[in-house]
Amino acid sequence: MTPTVVLPVIIGGLYAAGVYLLLDRSLTRVLLGFLLLGNATNLLLLSTGGAAGLAPILGVAEPEEMSDPLPQALILTAIVITFGIAAFLLAIIYRSWRLVRQEVVGVDEEDRRVARRSGTDADEMDPDDLAPEDRFPAHADSLHTDRHVEELLDRHYAGIPSDDVDLPPTQGRRR
Image (cartoon, rainbow, N blue to C red; front, side):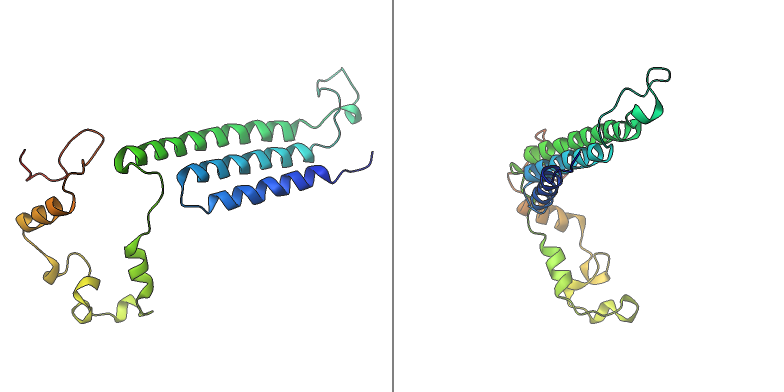
């Protein structure tokens, strides 16, 4: 039997498409990319099993005529793992849609701000020397009264429910 190049090309294409979709900010595309990676892994495991043979039951066939049961067991395990993680991703997508009415992960401005900072070691930094917006939240200059925090939260999250039930985002808000 001559080896064919079609199966490795299909596996490589599925892996490439899966990784490409995983790098997107859309959670639905991340889910599709993960499913493609799972299917590519299943095909890869299937191709490692070699040529089809008889069922690996003792007394039915000679050992050299039997197919290897290990890739089949690994494929079943991979299917279960892929299903479980896909269900978890669907739950995350649903929760994201319920909270912010979109399933695209936004740009994290805090990460960008931290990346712009110089590469100073944390032991060498004095919090008093940092700009007020770069100080850690519990620094003495950043502490506010609860009333001030409630007003900031009320102003920032006005009209946005804090959960999928219509609870106000702060405790101080009166309806």
